[in-house]
Length: 331
Image (cartoon, rainbow, N blue to C red; front, top):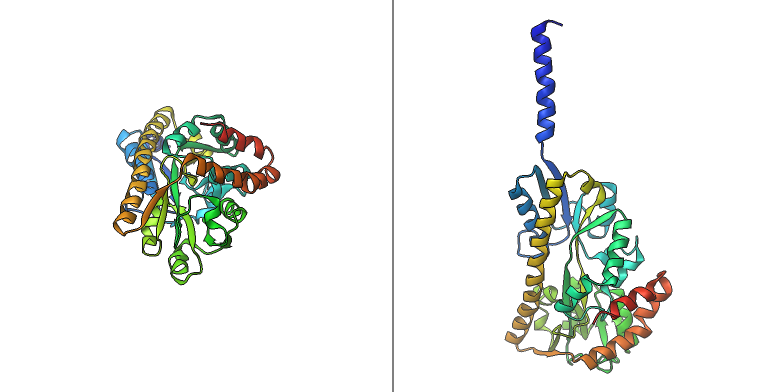
């Protein structure tokens, strides 16, 4: 090869190496929540993407909201296969892979947003995170979303209040508790709850604070049992990243991702409480009675759950009883 051609070839190789060295790492982040419409879970992911971009460490996070890339209950598997790198999802969705995750949507384990912060620092969550890690995934940010109870004709404060009622539940563990209190369970998707209440197919429901507002259930309910300090309905929805994706990052990129995730976690903690406040405001404005459980009333429900949801979980999940006990030990 002529000297000039050799020099050009060497320059081309060097340029290729340099381009590769400076090329951004692109991570694909997927979630099921509406994009660009103010949903706190979407915004949480967008904050991470923006902060990482601003850090200028050669990393870009591309967010795919609204199940546009992966179906909601397929996101855990998609992370493991490498189809996506990150997700925000109700961890209970992955309980088919790790049944212990069912404890993160269990009646009465988390009482309030302040209690959720204690739960995050507890042996219970240490074990949940350990199972997540052993599954090939890391937690970037913790997030707990609160929910409420709604009654078409009555306020739901104690187990006796639902005896004989038709209740629609957002999850199997809550449905089991409702049934244990004497309710009949109505199995319908959240999009049909409004019409079910309207037609008398359902007389009560439980769901997230955001859904209570977005589905305008205040038009069909006479009483709302809001979370307050003695809530029963909390769901864990963390931001996760596969360990395969994390292994691709250099130290500067990992540091930027960690800092961005902390900012997103703090944002969610503040905004999730505001969701509760917006729900109470919307229901009060609509003339719906808003009530809060006392500790004694919440304990009555935990007693029912102990004979139903907790019992089933302990029987079906190895180490399930110990896991529930760890959560209940957090005061």
